[in-house]
Length: 413
Ligand code: GLA
Image 1 (cartoon, rainbow, N blue to C red):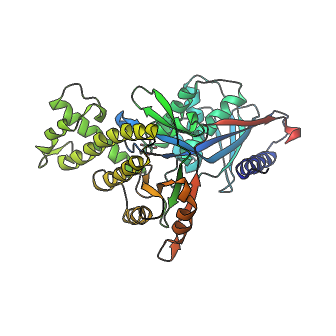
Image 2: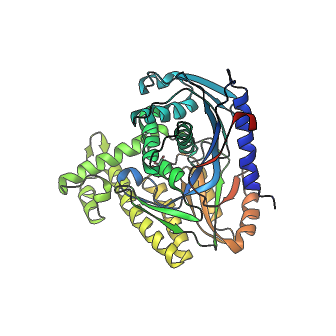
Image 3: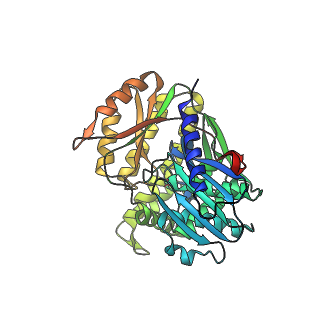
């Protein structure tokens, strides 16, 4: 029986291999390797990862697919099929200072190779081509998927190995230092270590994790309302600074606080008593809201993990919706459009809960829906419109993290 997901992967693989054939100097007989790294949804635990907290994401059946081969020297040629653009850069002297010379999308690729060099890998020049089915700018981690695909492909091409967690960390370093977004570890971790049928309960401080089965009775939908793309970069970095300032201020009252992970609801009274003041240029009232979100969201992650294990789907849904309210009111990363759509979606058949997913300032909504009502939910959600436009909407399922799709000698591609 034909499997549309596998067919989609096969088609992406063929397209990237064909693009390599057209790479300048495509004469080498070196094997072509193809890898696929998934995007992710996050069930709960938003803006907790860089506060050393808990997250519960799942890799989804949307991928960045990248093919490549080595060609000696130190030059990298990379083609982005969807943009019909290409970039070239040298592996000699790769550095974050010169990232600005590359197109935005190529910084994820070059940054990951730079990060692998820092891990001690001596990389040779490569020709690379990629495409993908992870929608971009929708809060589904297309950038982490691109980084992890690049890293895994470069390692495989060099017959080198790196523990999956180290690969995730190398990809995160690329985004932090080369691209300049101060993201946490969640997205790269999920793209690397995702498990089919499971969400990952990750402690972002110890990096210990447990894979929790997603009950068969649940379906996840991603809903992207008609609106502009996410422009998360600067707002995201600011939220991170606010969280760090809140933790520093709280450490005055409670020595030993290193991150908001170390704070309880009771500790927040110290901030409450200072809401008229400011600290390091931030109003304490703002720091209080940010800290309260993180403290309560960490609690919700653990509660949701337990509800999942006990099969309490109503509780799962309630916590998902509470997370949204907190992102809207306390962390203030939602948008009026997202709020309207969340409100509309939670009233549709079978919808247990819905929330903004990812960094925010736009992006997508995750709706958690009873499987038996998934058809009715999808039909009715597809009929919702804003300004005459419908949302982009699809069900998704948890899949494995990055994998090598195949390795063939050039004559077989
Ligand atoms: C983005 C970042 C993650 C995480 C989320 C918010 O996706 O890349 O590290 O901080 O936002 O939870």
